Image (cartoon, rainbow, N blue to C red; front, top):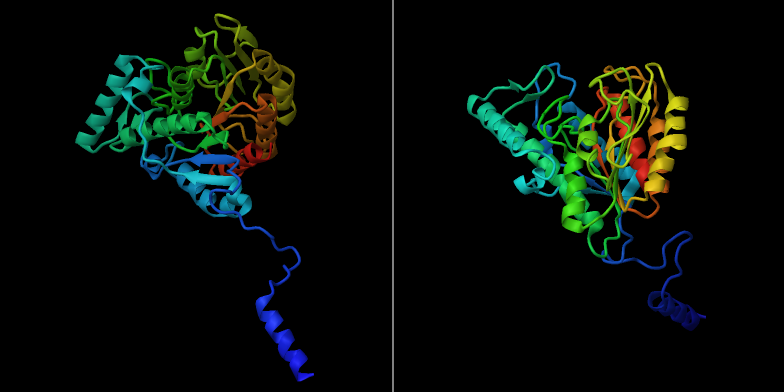
Length: 353
């Protein structure tokens, strides 16, 4: 009996143990792990842009989102979401693909003046720069270029990226900063995808509550750039107020929504008009101006969307895109709590679609 017990003791120490219920049998090395479904590009530099006390485009917009990304979202999405903070700034060459030399020079002069005076300068009634605005805006556009390079790299397994940066960009026109926007970061990404990666057809979709006049201006004369926007009309900036198409090849599409419109009108616009038009265009890559100020609690407009509308439209965009890479960029959204919930819905949609 004693001999048998001794034998069992030896076997217990030497034989492999059976796995516990639910335990993984194989541990993947870091090189074998499934790639993240979404890469989130951001930078603390983008917090430093400050348009002044009481301005709706506040640093808190990004600090609140960064806290969520590093906390609640990291727990919720785990390895499906990867936070990336590269030290990359946009170059003049990349900016000049969509902006005029005069605009780039004028903005660099404004940044320098704000820095030398340690003061906030007004470019118009809504748009301001502070001593840190140059670093923030050059980094924001640089992050967009980095996101494009990542999803288009040979062998890239992560095909979706969200650039969570500021200042926003979709109102910036080739020669004009306006509407809180200094450089049009998402269009810098569009032009980079075509110039550096040779893409022939790309799409830019904009669901910010305000018309993406800058994106439209930079797509109108380019038959290889599809642009579509849903937005409140009448509303700032006063453009895009006619339903229908324009552009050199009819590839620019606007779907204005009346003040007071909500989920039904928004979803109908995308499901019945915008997404079928994008599908017919058949882009090789999709860009999104992701503004969240059409939310019912946002103070700057009068549409009545909810968080689940942003998850819905994000998933529909991804489904329509098929396997095409997607890069989205944070635009508007000025009620901090609603912004956090809405961006989470966008992130969730990008991961789960």
